[in-house]
Image 1 (spheres, rainbow over the protein chains, first blue to last red):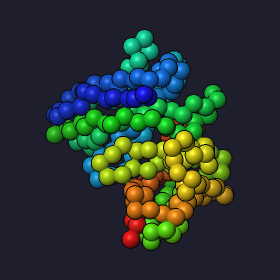
Image 2: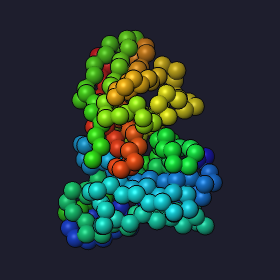
Image 3: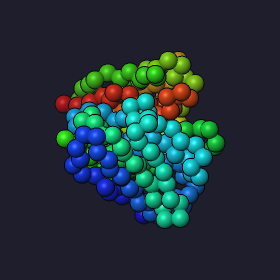
Image 4: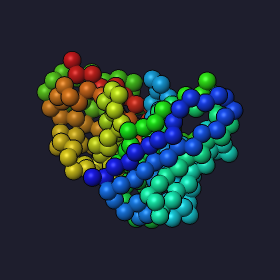
Length: 122
Length: 107
């Protein structure tokens, strides 16, 4: 079964740090680009970061650039999000999501999502 | 920054057709995907690459695009289709962008 399982969420004070993990299984992780998407309480989806299959290409949303770092460990099928200088507005459910397989430089969307991990900054 | 626009809500009677629009500058040049999110659940892709339906998604979900507007259509809407729906596109400057979401109510 294709699956993504996030972990690492919790309560953190403003200015603090947290590292989220996403464990992938059921597919060849090192051939897929990956994303982090978050959803603040009662709000819509916000894409925050993208990493290509071999970590060559990385993108961040303006709201997290310079504070968050995406990375991956293909040997162990893990995706990470290091979050520093956390703010109240970073409070959200964080999802990892798999990019739909597409030719290079094409982006069709996300076909597999984890259940999410909750980060509360307070 | 790139923005997508969706109506906040759409109401539909059971068995009728619901249409949700998504507008954005030069959207016709971008691939659009659509996600369904039911209360308390993770999003599920219902349409990707403008008009392709993943396996397991009912045929009543379809999509089209014309000019700066993409449209998700739910034909023969059922009560279980009640959810929030988000469009998404990739912009070369902003990367992935989500629309604000549309709440579909089946009344």
